[in-house]
Length: 116
Image (tube, rainbow, N blue to C red; front, side, top):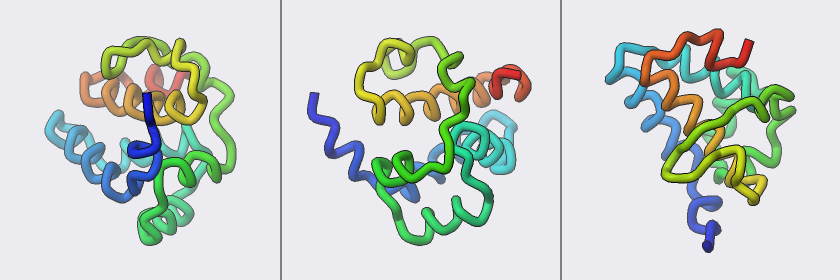
């Protein structure tokens, strides 16, 4: 599977879709941001810089300050794939974020989403 098209997609194009998905289910941008901060180690300012620069997904995840050590606890199916079995490390990180946003939209408690 050629993932280069996905990896070169600007994070700024995907971010509003995450927010829309959350808001349709009664959640907020703040909750989406908290999930992104938890997973990647970014803060509000560094996230905004990536959005302003239209950083691609590959750069966004490769320059993340620190992937949360509990990210490996994220399991389940997203887009037909078990996230814990995805071999490509970058694709797995992207799917981790997809899975967390999906859990938020499905009404899972933030403590559980953030694996506390």
